[in-house]
Length: 61
Image 1 (spheres, rainbow, N blue to C red):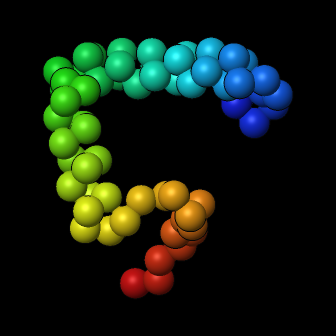
Image 2 (image 1 turned 135 degrees about the vertical axis):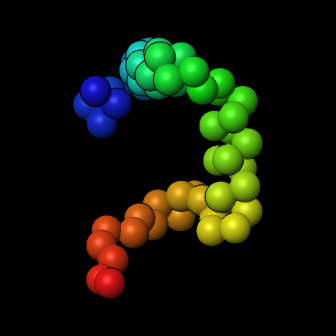
């Protein structure tokens, strides 16, 4: 797990495992990484990213 990794190399290895899982999920749905990246960039422009580590936890309708 990334949160248990202490060394940079361990974090990179865990991130690579997560990326592999994501890539396979996308491939199984016929979605390209490029499609996801395009949407990610657009959402970041519109809503901001997670650079400040702020996360929306709940929304009341």
